[in-house]
Image (tube, rainbow, N blue to C red; front, side):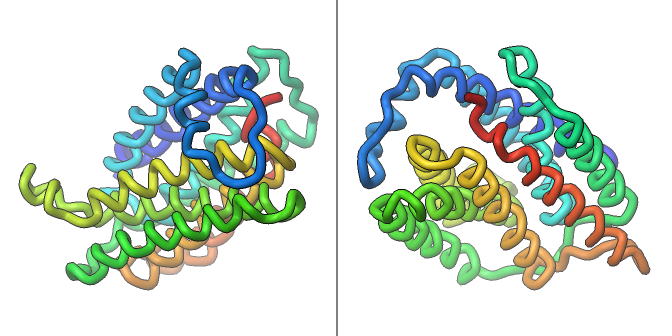
Length: 273
C-alpha cells in the first residue's frame, strides 16, 4: 500500500505546482461578468503557463487514479487537499510570503497525512452495479445545472457556491476513478464512469475558474476543498467499503480532519495573487 501513498503525494505535488502556474497565467485573463462563460477556458488556454499547469494536472490525475486503486477515498482526497500546502510553499518562488501560522498549517497537513497513513486500510471492495455508474453521469448533469445557477447568483453567494460545485465535480471524478472499468479498452470506453470523469473534470475546471474571477479566492478555494473531500469520503465509506485498520478509526478521523482543516487554513493560495 506504500506505493499508493507515493502516487497520492505525487498527485498532490503535481496539482499544487499546477495551481501556481495557472494562477500566474490567469492574471492575463480579464474578469468576467455575471454567469458562467464556457469561453473562459478558451481564454486561459491561450496562456502557455496554464497549458503547462494543465499538463501537470494530467500527471496528477493519473497518479490519483493509481492511488484510488489501493487506498480508501478518504485518504486520497485528504492527500489531494494537501496540494494547497504544496502551492503555498511553491508560491514563495513568485513572491508570496508565508506567515508563522501558515507554516504551522503546512506542518499540520503533513501530520494529518501521517496519521492517515498509519491508520487507513486498503481500498474497499464492495461491488457496485451499473446503476451506480449511471448515477454518476446523472450527477454530472445535475452539477452542470447547479453550477450554471450558481454563476447567476449575487456577488456574495456566487464565489463560494461555484467553488463548492467545482469541488463536488472534482470529488465525482475521484469516485468515478475509483470504480472505472480497466479490464480492457472496450470495457473502459463503454463504462459510464469514463464519461462522468470527462464531464465532471471539465465542469470542475470551468466552475472553479469562474469562481476565481470575482469574489474571494480564499472562500472559493475553501468551498472547493470541502466539496472534493467530504462527500467522496462519505461515499467511499458508505457504498464502496472503505475502512480503517482495526481499532484505528478515531485516529483516521483525526488525521482526515487535521489534514483538511489545515488545508483550509491555506485556502488563500488557491490562486496566488
